[in-house]
Image 1 (tube, rainbow, N blue to C red):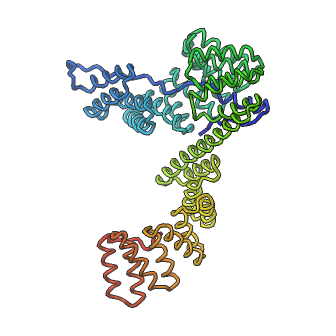
Image 2 (cartoon, helix red, strand yellow):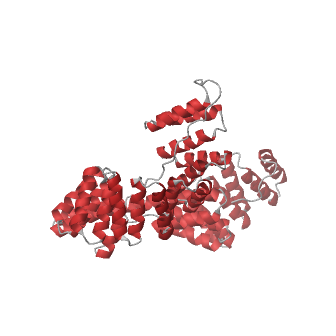
Length: 498
């Protein structure tokens, strides 16, 4: 997933990098709602098409919860109602429920593979989810079915722009504009792609055309301002940003862009005013606080500058942690589906966002352990513990990996550390018992297995391991009781899982 990150620095080059990130592009979830097909019998309140139509009307009024309820009622009456699945997916997408939307669009595409709208909806949800490759595939599927669908061309263009494939993006966006020349959004999106390709004159033409079509299309003023700013025309850039701010006074990004332009134009007072307004509108917009800090320092207000710098650093840490957390969550989901390659990619992306994120190191260690890279797993678990010395699961899994590597004494210390941190950690007792049993310390091993069973009476593996240890001690009757308990819980117990 391509993330637009703000560069931090004082040079003009880095300032321009900041500006590129501030382009405003299409929300790209627009999908044509599908009304229910007409039936030959008189319409009754309980018919699926009627519920679907009522849902469409509610969605048009902005009543998302009511629309979802109607679409679900239609699907309940007719589970194979493709149009209702597409419309429910659209409502869920608009509500921010990406996973739910994906489910509905996938059902629709399976029910009717020839539905271009089902593929278009699925593509849009995948793009929002960050699966750009999957989004391109689905947009292309929609276009195979409907080559003249302007929304699909627009969506494919913006997705290619994110990859980034600017030549492909420009080609598709030009097609979208050709198919629907009256869409200000399509002209603006094409303008963004052209600007990013360095074709500023052409970009300015597209933004101007968007505003000719709709003088209340606020993002075009912002994008036009950026194009003028990058061309070095600060006076016209500031004029456009002011128009954008009047058009959309609650947009923090526009205020931020205006502040940058004013600062470049040596108007520190005006820049500070705009940065403060942007921070008021969006208190967690980290880059605003950074640039406000710089402007205040130039103004000579060192105390206020230091406070803003501190706020920036705090927010930046939170942003990095949020990005890393999202990547780890995606990675865990992929690992649970058996996709270790994808999981490792997400865990590494988390570490790119925050190299000290303990959960990313831990989960990357688990993935490496699954792939048989014991040494790599050990390294990751140790890095996790360097960031969080009290990370219980990392101590436990480090112990398992060390035991697999043959470092028995170190493994034993890790299991003992695990139990010192949490005496009721069941897996810690079991793993320490296995370690002690391997070393021939059977009395201590039996004690650990019994502790694990006391904490979790249905722990099949612990009953089985207890039986093995008791048998090795010659306590055959007790061993048989343990084996019977294991068999009662699971006739086919696992041998010796960690």
